[in-house]
Image (cartoon, rainbow, N blue to C red; front, side, top):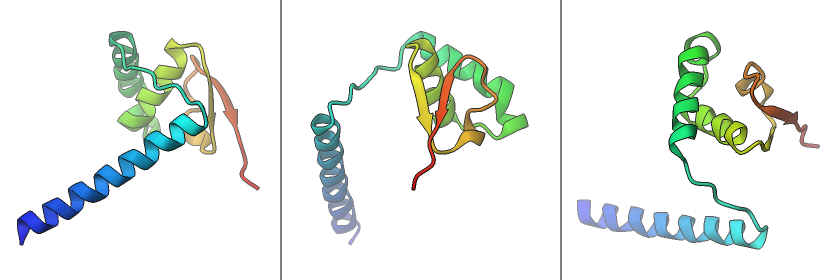
Length: 95
């Protein structure tokens, strides 16, 4: 039974991965590597904002990647990033 569940989960994961890769390719997204500087900056963000603002590790990595690459960070969730002064943040409101 376990091997059937594992095989089904693996198959689903492979399908989702292929779908994600296709989406990134079709819309010409770039995939950025997590560098040592990004990891270090994310750690600093976690130390500064995890307890006080509820910053998660994933959001810290996203913010650090934007900051290290001097990119505009576009998000629909202002509260996750507004306290980080190092990033250029653009909030979008879905219609």
